[in-house]
Image (cartoon, rainbow, N blue to C red):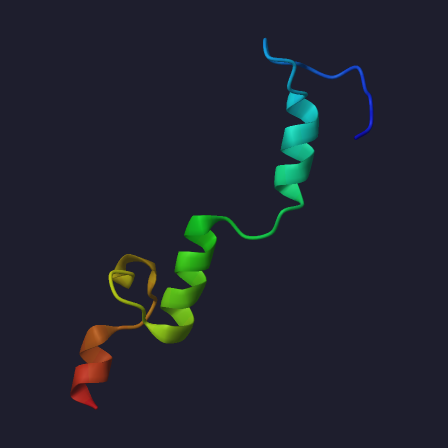
Length: 59
């Protein structure tokens, strides 16, 4: 781990380092749920879907 003059918590955690690692860690939980809803229509993910249910029913 690199040493830097960043912001630290009381416990000694480097806040800037944590933010940097989080930014490079990939998709968030909610981003994954949205992606799955758009591609697979997963259970309980309708709030993330851009599919028009009426269009599907009419087919």
